[in-house]
Image 1 (cartoon, rainbow, N blue to C red):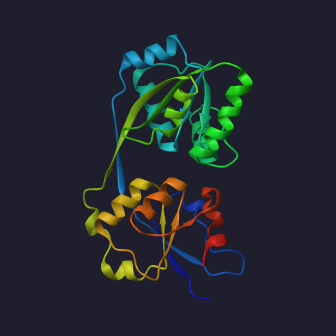
Image 2: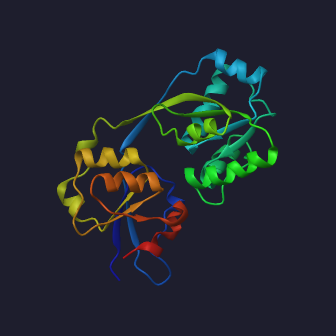
Image 3: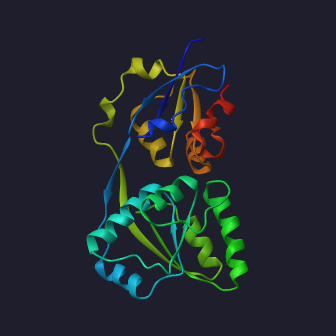
Amino acid sequence: MKAVKILVTGDRDKAKLPPTLGEGKAAIEWLELPVLEFEALPVASETLEALAKNPVDWIIFTSARAVRFWSEAWMDAGEDFPTETKVACVGQVTANAATQDGLDSDFFPSEPGSDRFLAEFEAVLAEAGRKPRVAIPMAEGGRTKIAERLKELGCLVQVIPLYRTRMKADLGNALSPEQIESLNGLLFTSPSSVEAYLSYFTVPKAAQLFAIGTFTESALVEHGLSASLVPGGDLQRIGEVWK
């Protein structure tokens, strides 16, 4: 059975890339293409000192990358993150990253994504019976859906720009036309990765497109492309939507 070649737009943990499309199905030859780079932004020492002295009720992490940059900011400032602040994450992967950095997650939704997060987190807030103070460290210019909805609910929300996302400068030389045409599938991991890839490369007509998360799927639709949504964002389940 001939292997299928799938390109994934980013550095991924090779242990989490499935070797096949499923039991008894074709093997997968993965091609990793990091299309983005990330620059940490300075977080004012006054901001961290204020959060240490007057802890917010919740901190919300929207990505594993946000967890990493947040931990580095506190380490550089020589401050200890307050144990009184509860930790919420948009999904299991982000929660795992928080745990690795010593920030055990008090809440993450049953499925990853902003919509599921808000639906289930709103229930947590309703049960608490009060509107909390919330901090959301995130990418500069990132999607503010969670922050905006929590503000609508009456929460006091502080958004903290933490890092900047941009296309890799030398991206255009990363793939040859022959490599692109040999692909059977392309897996996009974020809306930014969609924009970066399409700024330099074409999409083979015969290749199936996959998206992690509804925002990524929407970014492809905006370019007139349809994609299969990876169930639960779990790469091990990509075979379920392979056509």
